[in-house]
Image (cartoon, rainbow, N blue to C red; front, side, top):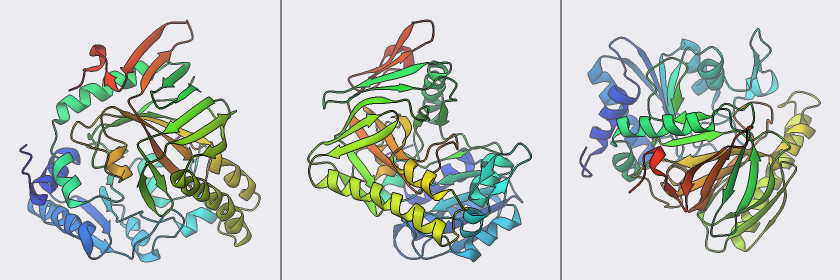
Length: 374
């Protein structure tokens, strides 16, 4: 689609192509009033109504990583919607009920948010979530060639499946080995047409959870960093030493200090929430410890995405990878925070148990085997 796409054009692509809404389906949109989130949410509402979906738009005040969603907003999930779009200025907000008393599946898996329970547990929901989405970002990055994105994501998922370790280096000083044996690579490929699937708009990344307690090395964040109250472009590189899977030190300038403050806030909040009964008794220390966990390695694949100081877009940008500090996607390192931080121009080498190696990216560029890059 043209680079001159409108918010209405992008909304039609999301509801018809990304979510494949059908007439009569229940579609829930949760957003914040005023500002750009409001405009995008209303465009999605109009596009869904035009397709014949039974669409509901709920507004709540803005939330961040450490605050709770409104009870009424989460109560709307009790209608068992077929599809959900969370279009928030920052975050949807935590689930105060499930945080203290998680949903539990027959296999023992626990979920501390009704959104994740319906999406990943019951698999009755398909969804998009876009914390910090702007109109400019929406119109530029939601109208891409999804067929090409599908192919690239599928190729990377295949390469990471069965991997033992991922070795990441970069010109800024990153040099870290990330064990992933047994972990399942995941894809945000923009195909959320089946129940139990979902991801961001903009779409465009492949990601995997490192094994807890295993990663070793140094990461130098030189793109952008996410904090509890927003994101920052990095002016002075942030050096993070990782030992036995956890952040040992964070050094650098103002951005490093801000990142460390967000990590420490995640540690404090875990203990505070346990005291207040907002976390299960005995879990506070574990949540606090995992505020320093290396929770994700992701690779950006959206050709329209750029580093602009908004992590929703930044982490999808070509020529980058990102690591998250905090919770992971395999639910064995729960934390109050998940802070994505960007590395520019990485070389990413996948190593397998039999000693074979595959190079996914070299100095930020996809190798030919993975669809190349522009």
